[in-house]
Length: 207
Image (cartoon, rainbow, N blue to C red; front, side, top):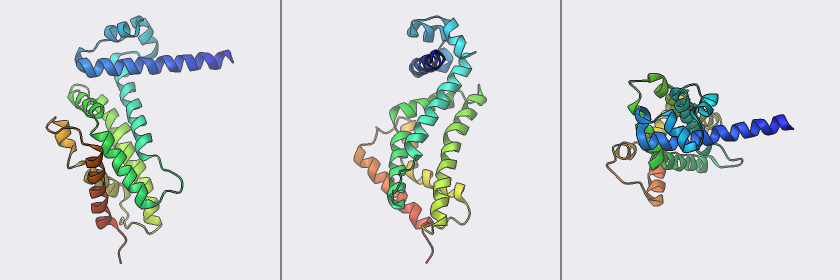
């Protein structure tokens, strides 16, 4: 029992470190953020951080991976008994709401700014985020293809890429460049529905 409690305490401490690290990275940028600053905000020492992460790069990668996992679980988790059209609309809306969210956009800017200096960090983000999310969606679309709801022509990954592109394309770059404000709930609903309609026209069953 004591061993289990120790593990839970350690996991909780790790999560707290990642929470604080995200705040510091977003406020100061990766280059300016330091392990000393993160430790001070935690109220501990750098030694405590190094017990969990051997470097700032490792800490940043862990924070990126955690956020990607959270986002995918919210966006792509399927609900039992959900009708295909309802599932596509829900996924589209949830994906768009996440991708244009202020915190997500700030994280994306931060990661891209490090892509040239530390390509392993941006590669980790790509593999844990966009690539894995696309694969999860492709699995769901493959089930709809097998059921005759969609006609994907054997390219489930390509169809998943098209689906996500149709949903995010009208607004993501504007948000990324800070050229447009966050969308309202109604605008998110409308953009998601428009993307789904276009996708179904392209990949609906042939008659």
